Image (cartoon, rainbow, N blue to C red; front, side, top):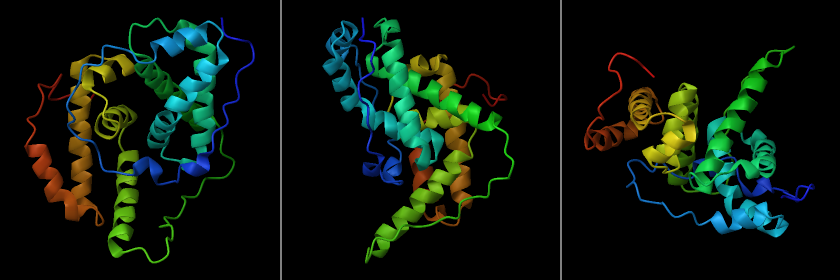
Length: 245
């Protein structure tokens, strides 16, 4: 059994710059690999037996990936620390429910997505006495950065805005597959949906995003390159041609 006192899970979010969650463009169309062996199983077993050091090791090993996924799903860097902390508190409380039917990282991603969903629901349900004003866009100053670096940061911010406009279902699949590099089969386990539904949502998410890129004044310059990449990958057999899942 786990010890009753949760270990110290301090997270220095200053190490994760606001733009760190978007350090690169999507890892689109990555090769799906067979990851049947769970490298975390021994650590999980030790943590379940009450080894606090093992739980701490799991935390240190996975916190960056969890924080990055949280940041991408939330789109609000100021909330990353609290939500990431909440994820690992849920891990501590729920680890005894992990059955090993999927890899620990898959289980952890599923839990992360659920915590983010819960956070967003609670945020929407809270009454707002004063309407929130949109935060003005700012490109952080980095001294005498070359124009290419400045342009890249602007593209990152523009891409972040467009992804935030996608529906939650499309955004989750797109982020997990194209940004996190998670295979479709594993996304199906994470979200609890059929693989075909994953591929369908991914198709519609890409379609919506690329259309928005073509109309965006900052990103339109890369629209042709994006269209070429999309054309080189055939469309999946969709769950429904008329339904936007």
